[in-house]
Length: 172
Image (cartoon, rainbow, N blue to C red):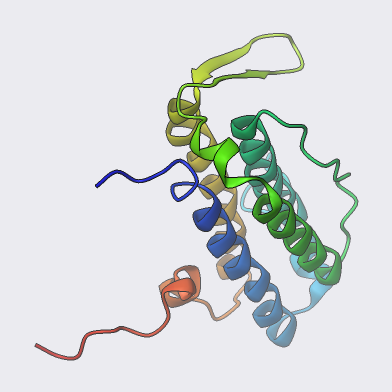
């Protein structure tokens, strides 16, 4: 059985963005929002909101590139947990709105990423998804999670993997 490009992308992005949205609720219940919003893991790293923004960008831009369409513009103006929740919701809504057929036929579609200096990468769609889009997305999701943990929010692996729900097997 082969996994489709759609199944290897959209549900994965949606599940983790949904998890990330719920982390904000936990953080709001336990810690000062302003402190979390300024937090970062290292002095040369972008702050907490940027991790959500970049995870969002990785998901929406990734799906748009695979589908061969323009992604929606989302200026990086989020300055509260409510704003970050809304960013997650908008990103999920966009990626779920993209025609499955466009994504499923993207394995061989040429995808190019250009950086501000003009350099970049060229990929076939499958390589783009597995070598860049998903790893980049999970880098920012994991960094957001790590910032929350470093700030003392009581989170663990079940929060990161909450989309799985409770175990579905009993003791052996």
